[in-house]
Image (cartoon, helix red, strand yellow):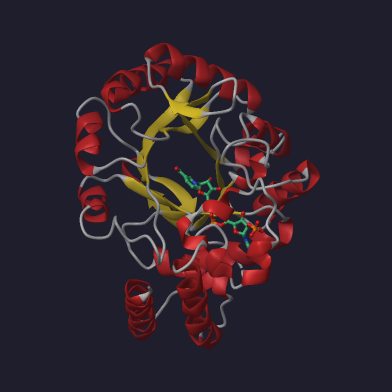
Length: 327
Ligand SMILES: NC(=O)c1ccc[n+]([C@@H]2O[C@H](COP(=O)([O-])OP(=O)(O)OC[C@H]3O[C@@H](n4cnc5c(N)ncnc54)[C@H](OP(=O)(O)O)[C@@H]3O)[C@@H](O)[C@H]2O)c1
């Protein structure tokens, strides 16, 4: 079955409903690592994504401190024309590994040059500011990115984790092709204002962590959590700790019959749910193995009914009540 596509804002680029996210592929060896990761598995996952029809990949220089970009570059060698390639800038690391933000013109340009090399490409399709950090440098960084668009190093410029005012600021300098915000059943902050603003202004929306970093896939349990490697950042995340973790597992249990009625897996349901919003261009879905992306790729074609959406809404309300009532 071919994968359906949606238009990325003003660019008109057609992206599949699922794009491959490559944060976890960076491995465990840094502050926000996901535990050990075999590069062979990562390359196989990326190639499998292309084989099943996914036409775009999201990475960032910070993922694995350059490692994710390097693996993406290796995996797509010889297949560059099949991929709309997105990466991100603005996150740096100190000698002790501590991550910090810089958006000076010199840093942004240096990062872009190094990303082009690691990705083994002449041009990056979508170059995004990863975080509006430091706030006082977003105009400087964005202006430099606009220059690199003119120079042909970058095709389109986007932002991630930006609030409305920050979007307005950069939009006045150079058109924003896309916003990359978090969006999932557990993180709905963009629904009321940012999504409508993007639609009104022809800005594409590529949402991240739609399965809450694996939590909504149905593959998490107390035992799995306890067995996560020490260098998997999820161990410390609030959604993986009491009282949220128990409420999240109960939510996943409640989602099972909705997924079954639609012939979807839980992972596919979580992705289809974010894609129900017409303002969303694509969901960025992480995978560490070929079988994972094979399962999730098809979710971009699923359509949920009004009743399904209402049923999910009830479960989400119950989850919030459970967390609020927890001692
Ligand atoms: N801009 C930003 O600040 C930002 C922040 C976060 C993410 N992102 C982007 O968004 C992408 C996606 O987000 P994410 O990776 O955080 O979360 P996600 O897509 O919600 O979850 C991905 C994780 O779920 C597990 N998984 C994937 N497919 C599965 C399947 N079929 N069955 C069971 N488990 C499965 C894998 O981890 P395990 O196998 O280890 O469980 C995988 O790494 C990232 O890779 C990155 O490109 C951007």
